[in-house]
Length: 121
Image (cartoon, rainbow, N blue to C red):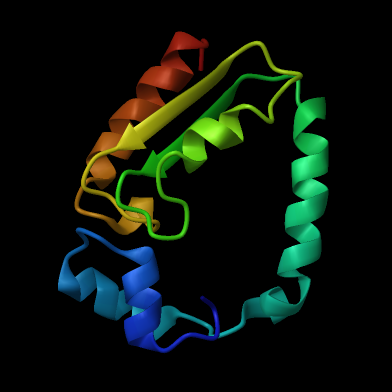
């Protein structure tokens, strides 16, 4: 969605964010940072191929209302981490793609803190 209009971008990224947060994100958004649109497909393929080599604990966080990666995408992505014996999936309710900017961002902070704490961090 990097080359998208602000309305298209907001529809893809947000579900419960404050309109002021959406407007601030719009003001700071680069329509195509670093030429991401040209390299995105290759990056996704390589990343998917290498997921099975990850041996560390993995936390996957998805918004339940993410139009880019809707359920069950998190559950399916979890299956790719074959090298890790510790893969956790958190689905955050009432949340879109821009999880850190959504109204539920404190749920993300709490979930991340609990996950890290359970692993000694």
